[in-house]
Image 1 (cartoon, one colour):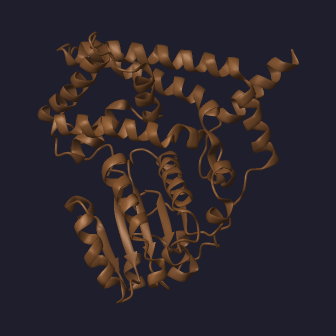
Image 2 (spheres, one colour; image 1 turned 180 degrees about the vertical axis):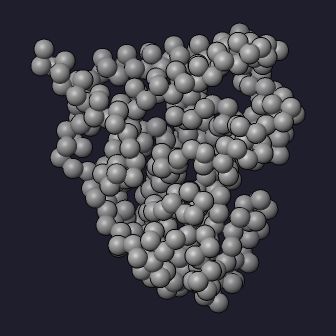
Length: 361
């Protein structure tokens, strides 16, 4: 799925634009409701969850997932924001890999590679390396959520979703973790909708047939339609080049080796966390741009479709992204993928140097 596909930001028909406006209108009523005003922290959470993305793109995910039912999309989006607050997703992202179990990351049970032939990031899952009960359920759930958040930074325009490989080589019943699989499916279908483009289940043994019989009813038909079983590795080449596949799948990629945070990463993190004034300024600047964006969007949803207002919205969207970028070092950390060069976020170095220069004055 890309931004150019039907129903996506660059390819909307009139009814879809009206649905997007209708969803924004519901949010506008919630933001401006004087009798029961929305919690400012809730509003902030919405735009932090949007991150670098155009907020329209985020809302369109829920509209597509809910078959363009505005009320249903609205309820699910609000449920998502509540879930993010309950799970403290922002805290997890801010602490980064330091808050995860290193041994579990190092297991190589789940990591990113790619891209596939369509240009999407690949989340490679080695199912045999997930042993139910080896790590606590909370630890594995945190790693899964962090993986979902990291995957968003690996996306390159125009792509909006990732490919997932479930490598079933060596699978046994000790690897079958139904509670965690339910958790993963719930994430994909309810809290990160439209983020899953293609699922390739490779080398599934006969014993998995019974497991699939249990799992299949949990899947939305749209999600199920994106899953393909592959037992002939030659068929994998139509989706993915061998250069980004592990050797056990006839690929040439080196074995996954996790690179933990460096001394420089830790120094950066401490510097950002100690710069409370810088964080407050970045947060205030982001809030101001959010309010500007909402005011322009309010005019748009109430019928102002002039070229001028569309250009203003486009500019406000860019300003929103720029303001969020300045906030990034204070609300997130560098990851393994920053250290390998797969994620390029120079803002960490830029803000770090700025802080150091100010301290030296």
